[in-house]
Image (cartoon, rainbow, N blue to C red; front, side):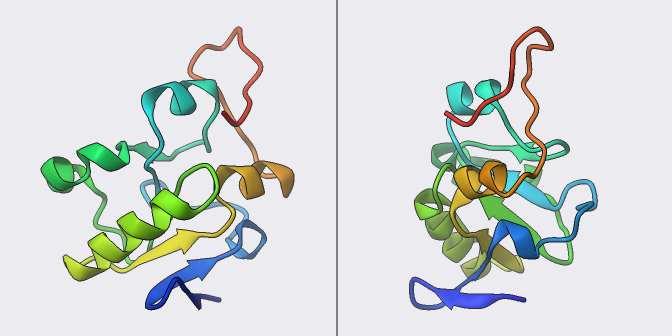
Length: 117
């Protein structure tokens, strides 16, 4: 299921993830405006720049999936988390790939149509 990406960082394509991810297994590291525009249901939001000081808020999942817009930021966070004791996997192609593969996207504002920013 996981494949090496960017050296030692394991990665998975959105299509390879279970249809229903358990609560607290997807970490979205995009910025606040990106999250508000649209995100995966049930994801935990901690922007990349806040990860080091918010480690206590990162889920202790058996396997944690990390996502950003296209896979670059999440790859760096995945490597950081793995170096700090998590079993993290980068979601390749990020929320762009998530959305284009037909996976659900929700917005914080129920009156807005969700989209990937």
